[in-house]
Image (cartoon, rainbow, N blue to C red):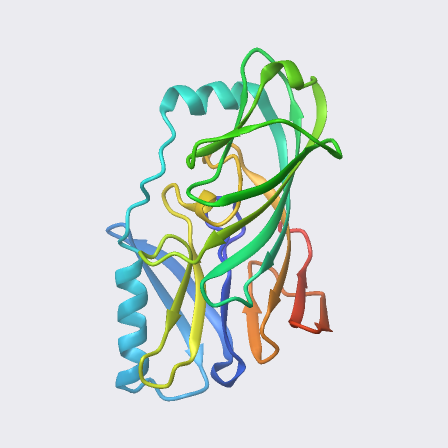
Length: 243
């Protein structure tokens, strides 16, 4: 679902036959995400069951870890963060993406950590050039000696499995009609299960987002799309920078 800040910037994709005409609200009750939607079909037992599944999925706890010391250290390293994200969600088991992070690097006294839980890192570029890095299935690390103070851009090309426990990018197949639903769940530390990021609440950021989805799908994000282009694999949804 949609929210304008970094920690709660959600994406929801679904078959166009179930078109959502308005998102009423998104709020927290006892740490459970309750999502209210206005839909153009009756909420029969099937749809009620779907939303129960959605609610249950938000209970999953991320196993990725970031210590307070690591978060404080990174807060002293970077500022002015922005993301330009590309996602290809046309696959059935995995999705691919590009996470381009722009920021101001204030210190090179320690390696730079980019959170990314249990994915596959295909390439890391620093200011347009491939750079050596390490990856331990929790985070990507760039050595301090390879960094330079000032404006910086890091691009990570990656793939990741759709999540099965409700965190990151979750994919659900309705067992009754086999329709597929994809949505995001980032709280409290699960954004990095969808894309490489500085996943901590005091490093707020603006987003640009592009999503390649099946042709008969609709994609909803924090802001309305400003372009929609048909491609061989599906439709490319372009969302302008978030507020």
